[in-house]
Length: 393
Length: 187
Figure (spheres, each protein chain N blue to C red):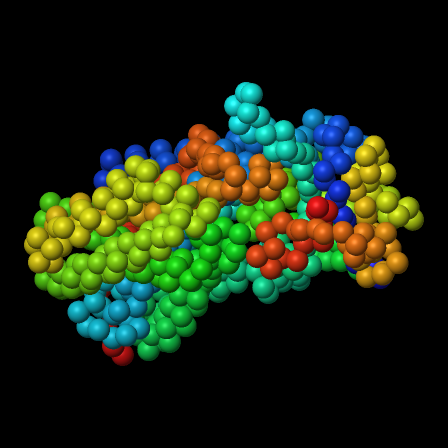
């Protein structure tokens, strides 16, 4: 079987493949991956006891990092689809890189979640032979599995420059990805007992923030590739357009967040208002989510009227820190209010919010996932031609 | 087939925790584990001396509510959580993948991770033990010195629990969530 015929790649020796293009980034990737492996080793010995999660706060940093990665994947899929699925020529140049990015980010997400789910192998078996069709987790997991399959097929056709087939598989992959991602929002939205998470907000917010994350990441990928030099015209044109779209998306996100908080506090409804007020007193919300994730990039876009694409690379780095806080906070916020029924009488005592801080093992596995993503990215950029503008056949 | 439920005459509770001990003994719950399967909530006395509200000091025994419309059953991706033939919410440890979604979805914080099987566990109304042996009471009920608990078939109009629920006022927890709990607190 000739692999070259299935997916065209650059032939090179293993040594050539492993020689780093940038020593600093290679070091970062290797250190993070090493931490991931050490964390996995600790987890395999101690199980969930190595994590900071508790009965009252069963989901922690690893769930947040999984969401971080799959949001990135869905976002890059949306960004990549502009060119190869919807046929907008200005965006065609970023399609290959974005679709490749969507594959490696979801793989990194799966690597992280494999060590959060207590029995991942059992999950693969019983998801098939005993499916819980009313469970958002079942739909999310199953659809993401399908999504990855279609993304890989789309990427293969992109590499072959077979745009017709890439478009078909890309469209199917995009639709499945959107369904999977909104189901991930549904995992939280369906929690009737958790008033801060329950409702329509998260399934829609996830799609919006995925799009925003995808644009941040495309800036980071091209910012890194063309560090210290000017962007080529086609890339600059795509990035300028994306920067303007990002301005609109961030404005919508700020609008959404404002109303989420206002409706949460209004009327002082027990449990919901208490929790929202608690969230509004945290630095991770104001500095992480609002400043890093929204305001700083938004001000840059406004000030430059969407033209400062070099500065936007740095703003995107800050934006991704904000995106991490959004993921971490949404997991934590949903579990803030204790459910400890009758361990205190409801609403008669001020609630003491559930506390959680990730353990070192969780940090090693969670942030180590970024190392896996970076290594896959560097290998991909060497093996595949991610820049050649797809041509219509 | 029965539809098992439990009524709790909670004002009779003296917080002796015999029910927790009996549950651990009968169902092999880890010794020393806190609030596994059942627990007794303590409401502290309100006010400052000498104006203390004695009436505020109550003990509230609780456990899985065995909801007719259980959120934990709904969210389980592998049907590990299911209703058995008697309407009892059970977990099949062979199918549980420990995604912890049920722990997040339960409005009553009634689920925990059993460290031995690394799966989620909860009260089973002694279905694997006493009921399987043909007994008609749960361990917590049988041991209670002040007869707080009444366990029985809600579908049998002649059962003690049905009679008590017909004659005494009662409430259930978080009824607005629509979970239809089968634990009833007698007033």
